[in-house]
Structure formats: C-alpha cells, structure tokens
Image (cartoon, rainbow over all chains, first blue to last red; front, top):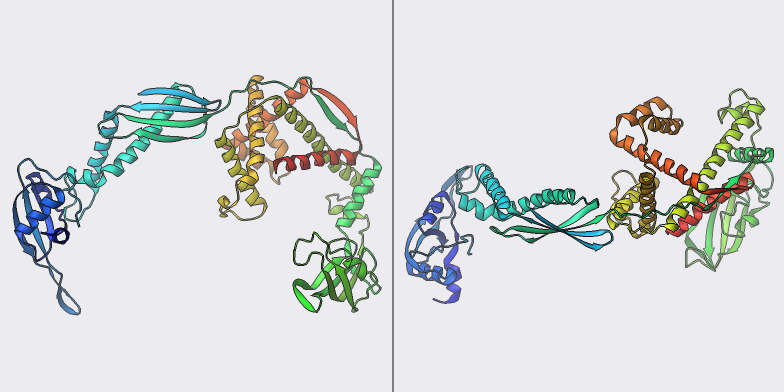
Length: 98
Length: 444
C-alpha cells in the first residue's frame, strides 16, 4: 500500500463513551474511508502509529434520516473500524490522525 | 519549599523557588476531577467522561493554570520569608514544569532601594522676601480690568489696540492657498497673533472697507510651503471695535466676590489673593530648592517598574488635561515623553519616604483632618469633602502621605540654613515660574 493511501484510509479518531471503554481493552475506534478494507486499515494503523495490530472489525454507520418543512433528507453515514492492538501495545495520544 | 535569593543588581533580585511535585500534581488532579463532572463533550453523556479523556483534553490547560497560581502563592511566601520589599510586579518564569517533577521557578523582581540618606543640612536655601506694594495692587487691578474689557463698535478708523472683524483670503501669486482664508475673524491689532506686518497694515482701516495686505511669511513659519513666501491677502473689514475698560465700580467688584462695593475692601480682597499666590510661590520655591539639594546629595537607583507605574499615572493625567475623555486609550501616548519626569518624581518620592522614616515621622487623624480642611476650603461644601476623605481608607492614606511629605520638608528646612532674599512681588512670582520652566525643560 502506498503512502498516499495510508492517509486516505484513516479519517480520524472516534471518541465516544463506548470508544473510551473499548480503549481500556486495547481496542481503538476510527472513522475510516467508506471503501476501506480490513487489511488496508490494519496496514494503515501499523504504518501511522507503528504498533502491531491484532485484528480489525468494521461496520457501516447509516446517516440519520431527518425531516423538515422541505421534506425528508438524510445525513451522510460513515464507516467505523474497531482496531484491536496486539497484547502489550497501547496508543498513548489517541487524538487525531486525519 | 526551597528558596534561594540572588542579588543581581542593587535593586534587582532573582528568587529561585522549588515546589514539591506532589503539591502541584494533587492540585491538577483535583481540578481535572471537577472538570470531568462539569464538562460536556460530544459522544459522552455529561458527567460520564472518563478521566483519561479529560486529562488528554484539558490536562495541559489545567496544569498551566495551576502552575500560575502556585507560583504566585509561593512567590508571596518567598518574599515574606526573606523580607524582601518588592517594587511593582515580578516576572515569574517556570524553569522546570513537568508532571512528577518538582516545580522550579525564577521570580525576577525589583526591590525598593535602600538609601543611605545624606541630609542637606548645611544647604543654603534662598527664601524670597517680598512685600506687596500699592503699585503691585494697581497693576493687578489693571490686569483684571483688561481681562474683563468690553468691545464696543466705533465709527472711526481702526487704531492700534482696536479689535477688527474681518474676512480674508490669502493668495500666493494668483493662487489662493489652503488655510489662508477665514470669515468673521476677530483680530486685535497689535496683539501679534498674526504674521508680522499683517496687523500693522490694517491700522487705519474703516468698517466696510476692503484692503489688500502684502506680507512675507517668516522663514521659520510652521507650514513649510509658506515659509519665506510673499503673500497677498484680500481683506474685508466688517467691524471696528474699541476696547472699553470697566470702571472700578460695585458691579465690577461683585464679579470678584466683593459685594459692598467699597474700594478699600476690594483692594484688600485683591491683596489677599495676591498674598496667597505669593505665599504659594515662595513655598514652592523653598520646597523645590530643598528637593534639589536632597536629590543632588543622594544617588538613588530607581526601580523601572515604579517608573512605568508613574508613567501610566502621568499619561492619564495628561489625557485628562487635554480633555481626551475617560475612555481614551492612554497607551497611545508614547512612554518616552513622560519617562524622565516620572523618574524624577519617583526619585523624590523615594527620598522623601526615606526622610520620613529617618525622622520617624507620623501623622495622626487630627493632622490629616486639618490638612484636608485646609485643602477643602476651595470647594463648595468643605465638610462633605472632609468626611468623604476621612471615610475612605485609600483616599485617607493618600492624604496622609501628602501630610508626611510636608512634615519631611519642614524637618529638612529646620536643618538647612535659610537666606532671606528680598525681591519685589513680580520678581518672586517670576522666580517661581522660572523654576517651573527649568524643571519642565529638564524633564523633556
């Protein structure tokens, strides 16, 4: 995977209560490009943070449907990845890799 | 807490303080906990943000805040323990500021200089001795009459000393130049308020007459493009007015607060005022000489923070004098303008304070009250002013220092040898003014 693609795959950290709990179990949550694959994400995290990745789970988040006076519309969704690091590895400042 | 004090110059101190890491870190943790309870972050229900996230987000800010506070607290403790007497605010800089390590910071501050006082004991002080003569009073009354003169229209040619109302338009060659014209301008002939030659050429003009005046601008005229040029002015005279001095009658006197219209009591009133002015002038002169003597005998290194404080004060004062209004931003005025004057004032203040402590002078409430009453005489409701001052601790302290300064001067005067120098009223006043002018020049 070329260098350029690494930065295209990971869109940013996803910080929520659930993600904070996951971080305690060595699992970190990212927003990723909607066409990213598990192997791509694994490589991207390993390249960017220089940590060994154990496994990756991905899912597509659907955007919420919002109605207003003009009718119905929906927000754009995104693809989310749960990245489990190999035992003993941690991400210290998990703040922002755009 | 460990403190070490270095003396870097007679008035500058470097204080290095070490604070145990625990003290800072505990404080930071406590604050973070508080933040965690209050803060609202996207993705978290309020109050449910884990500490690790809070620390990541706010850790640095909170730490800076805490360190700032801790430094200030310990700075105060350090100077109290080491009995330093700081002038102005210190500059605080953290040299070691890391979690888990002892906090170390350096405070650079200026202290009040310790002054080895040399009293101007055998100094010769010149005290003007002046009597107000009848001639002086006559002259003063003349001046008063001129100030209250009326201008009456006259149907004759304008003479020197008359006031004319004119329109004028100035030409360089054939071109009218900017700022060279006005309408309805009132000009007193012989007052030398215009370019030399202008007023002279208008002498003899009649109301309604048009006259052309040719003058040459002086070489040092402030508008450079006009300096040294010859200009023609077309003038139209509307009015010629002669000065009429008011008679010394009861109406004239009542303007100066003499109601009974008696010539003698008017003269007495004028004399009183003159005497007051003279006394003030003499006081000032003596005071100034003493202060000069004190200054020349004592070298004082003046803390720059005190100077900049004084500069601020002077700026504000200047802004008020020029009527720039309360919300005028004084930082627009250049510091340099006031620096020398401020320096002088701080120096005098420090020296006098030293004199006060040297003689162990103090002022009690009665003395302060007496001083305020004396000063309040010129207000409409003196009692109120006195009460206001006495009721306000800060204002009272200001007055107290004024009283102390006066006492200090008196003490110095006791020690000095005073030479009585006879001079006339005018000379005495001028001498005082002269001194003011000298001082102003020094400070420029």
